Image (cartoon, rainbow, N blue to C red):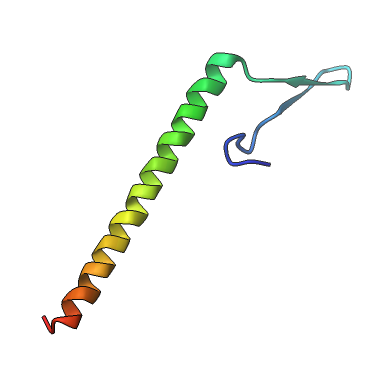
Length: 66
């Protein structure tokens, strides 16, 4: 399973007669969630890059004995 698909994709629906049907998300739902997942990935990437920048700045300052 991919992270973009999410834990509830595909959505299996159990009917009252015992049969199951597969409900695929419509285009507007999947486009919105895909954009949200991309924004989450960008946010997480920026957090990691900022932590790396702080860490490297501290290491650089230690080299100069600050």
